[in-house]
Length: 229
Image (cartoon, rainbow, N blue to C red; front, side, top):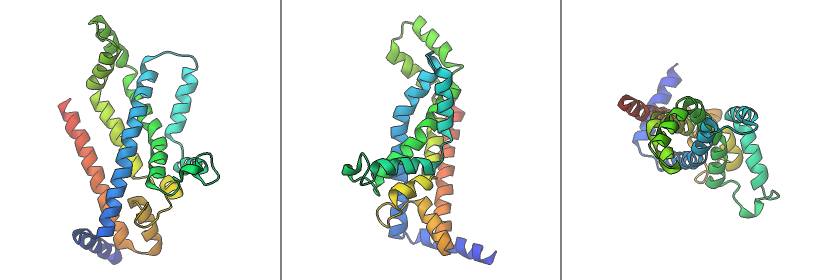
């Protein structure tokens, strides 16, 4: 128990010392996860809305595939992305392997079905009613889309916060495609895993504190918007 308390104390000292390497890892983690969440939302929100509002052939099969992808193992995503980005892969000439870009690609693939699935589940009952009212008022497709997002903004925010939380807590895929290279692709989760295996508990705890803080901030934002609803 004593080494845990000492680890917490050392972690606070590390964070308050504004260690350059530590904060570089934090900034890179936030950048990669935030950008992948934004890209995912641009893809996933229209997909989720389409699933919720449209009837099409093979919709049941497509829905099952979407739900399956929501729970896809991160290491599988990392493996697939690495096969495409590897030197001998179809996209090997781009030389994206072991770069932050590769990590963003992997996280985007991982997060997109999660956001789309949440949008679909929360929109499928209320969306049709909103669309019918909008059409009655003479709204075009663009205005209907904006109204849907506005009326269901809390659920959209839930999807985005969930996606961001999934991205920033991911370790398997980013280690495969990023390589955990110091000063280049090392993020908080890979840093925690590495230092924990090496017995550097203070540094692992420090990053854990940061992750918990980010989780608290994102959930506080969600709660704030939810109270406004």
